[in-house]
Length: 195
Image 1: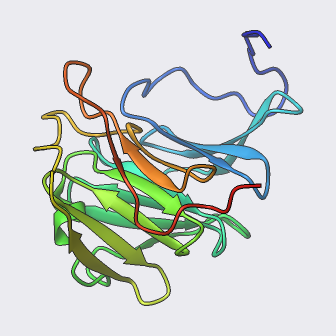
Image 2: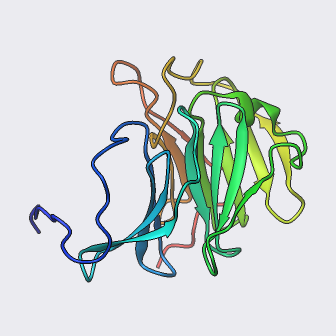
């Protein structure tokens, strides 16, 4: 139970450019971290402490965020005008779903929206400020907007990033919008059974 510095050795060498606005998400199936550095898609193998270049020359915009849909093996990149997907089970092909998704405009237009996968609903749930969340059905490529009282207010001006997360053991989403404001939780499904 301590921090350990991991300077990846061997494998592909990830250049030290594009060090800001990167997207990193852990994939529980492959046990790898997928990292998009705005120009390339990388995989980090924690057990081997190496990077592998998964897809070269695929630009990602500033101010987008990512989430993995583990059931469909997709990395979704959403925000700042785009909705892209990467297929994690094969050749890491990127698809542009920006014009193919329905009712997701608020997330697509948002600056770094909050995104989290909910395994109970088997949906990606996004928050971009206010009293609404957007429940994304990957199969239908459609969002449903659902509103709740006691909203946490507008999203932070520079974006939500990873401060919107789902906690499976508690069955809630948690938001820490900014350091100077209260944290919030939102329950969309019944609480998990106590053991």
